[in-house]
Length: 286
Image (cartoon, rainbow, N blue to C red; front, side):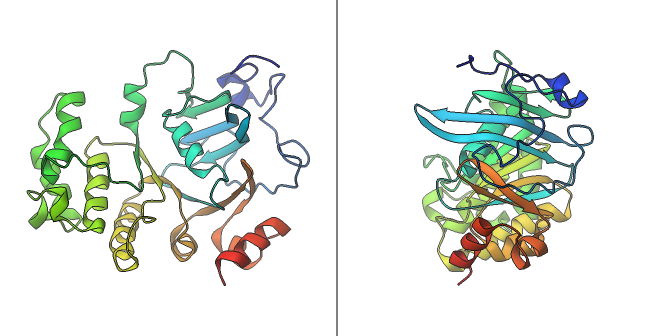
């Protein structure tokens, strides 16, 4: 078996030339041997803010991502849907380089950010990520949590900017409280503010409402609505089908480590073309 990361380079994406391990052009039947439908709105790697080609990731013998091709335009909101274990969270972690990919390429504004040995600090400043667990330091106030990374990583005092973010997302009265004094929804909003304080160019959200009580979900989704209105480029892994249908520019259904079908939300939810997509939506929309 060829060694990791062999076969695809940034020039292959721009020029449309696949290396020996492929990935620039979808294989018939998809990477996992199933039919796939790709209705990406982007021309491969040319106008996209983010481009993935042939991205593969395994943990031991467990193949989690099996040749992901995806383009995301600046200002676009893409929602990843699919059953648990379909690869959504791993895909987000690979985009942010929290997990190194085994093969393929990840391009941000045409730059290969998945190249082994690359300094990942600047990459993670440009691509923020928020998880379903808030990961706030319990001994720090909400404001201190938000200011920690800008002060240590960017070496700047962002107090005024952070206070403005708290006000913008309805938490001005809570920024001096500690995490255990905040509701789950408030803590998740603080986690979003913490990521935004690094001034990212795009944001990744991994099931950020999954751990919340139903009555708190709406306040977090409102933050995402606001970010979308402001033009933030976003990729969300979500089980909130109503939200995906309402606000996503594109919905990607993942199954077995591949993007099985993608397209505008109205088509995906109203007229999916593949049996596996229909089966999944029947199970979650009942």
